[in-house]
Length: 230
Image (cartoon, rainbow, N blue to C red; front, side, top):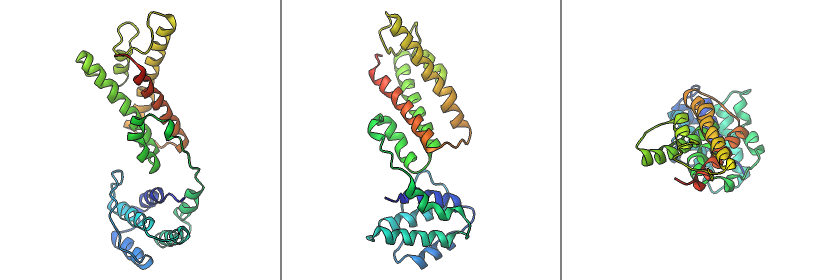
């Protein structure tokens, strides 16, 4: 099944500096026999990108055969782009993407903050959101227990300290339990320093596969918090 949302976002992003509102509406009106409807998307900031997205999502809602929708979509893309523009391959490329049904294995809080961004192709944003959510949850626990308001790696060292932990992950009377506590403390702190912070401060692009890796890592940490004592 064609991912109209992803095509709409990628086409809008690719054309936001090379077309105009008037041109988009003129071309759409010549190809489509319906009026555009609004489909606000929080991740789209350009009015031209939003308009392209609106037209494509309106097309997706039409009571037409899938083949006819795809032909109209391709006509719309072709009319907006030049002959050798890679954007003309969007329909074919999107159709080839495998459907990865992994969300049933992901923690509900990670699904809530990441799924829409991931499915819209904002892979780095999706990954960043997962680790921000972990930071937020641990921050609330530590603040409620100690009154301290920390962030990032320093927060994780405080929360999962071997000697005076706020969040207890295992039986600390045993060597195995202490090793688990220390190991997860390092993992929680490491994702803040090595994954969350770079993505928050730099415009980093990652692949779909790498985003899935990060989502599973964040999900594991969320499930570990569910099992913890605090």
